[in-house]
Image 1 (cartoon, rainbow, N blue to C red):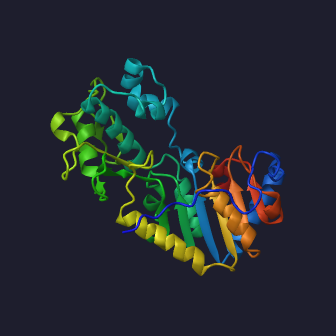
Image 2 (cartoon, helix red, strand yellow):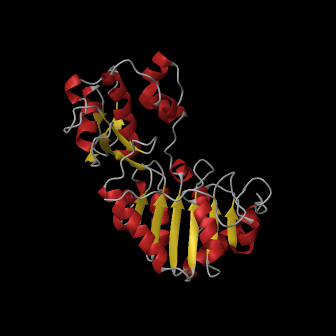
Image 3 (spheres, one colour):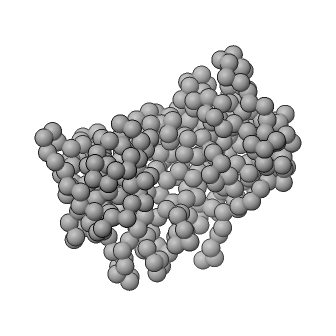
Length: 324
């Protein structure tokens, strides 16, 4: 199967964002937000189709934070030993053994992929669009859309999935569901899993910072270690499911060209703007029936070329959904 590449590059509009082509921010006054939220509600209701572009800010709004109390609850021993203070830093730490590496990553995967988000943000989003013709393009890898009820055939996870392993080489392009093995790993460290699926350490019991050697995931083809199916470098595997999702997204976009499309961007920053932000700007500029909406706390921008068809809400996504 021919490898498909995510479109990278600026839109055919001035896409400098923070350097002179941004819209005016729509203020911080409650009544100003209220006006924009009303516009967004109307745009959702009137749209022939809604294309959702979701970034890390959406999961952060749902409570999937990687620092603070949530980090300390599950990684206090790693913090004490190695002196990093957030999950991202721990993910890049050069552990001395694979047993310790997978102790860390099995906890990380379990709480961010197999536990439910603390806040029902994705459920609220689903209620907003469930009766619409929708599609989701996301850089998130935590599976929250499917857990909230979104149709998996209307989802394109461009950057992978915490729930999949792949060969670290990679010697082939298959991926593998990791739920059963990840559960064995966290249980082997002394954690328990409650009836609600939440991970916890029993009171008075010290958990281990390593997993048994026999639980280490290895490739059945070449014997090398397995790794997460996450887009970190050129070893990322775009498996058959990825290719099919990419094709479904392309088909959805082509089928709705020229119609009233709402490009609804949620929690997307400027780390990887070529995946969601710039294409949304370009497609909005090309289709005069379309509307671009951006909801993000601190980063709400749109080019001057589409300013009159843009809804920018600089606010907490949770509060926006509550008002919608």
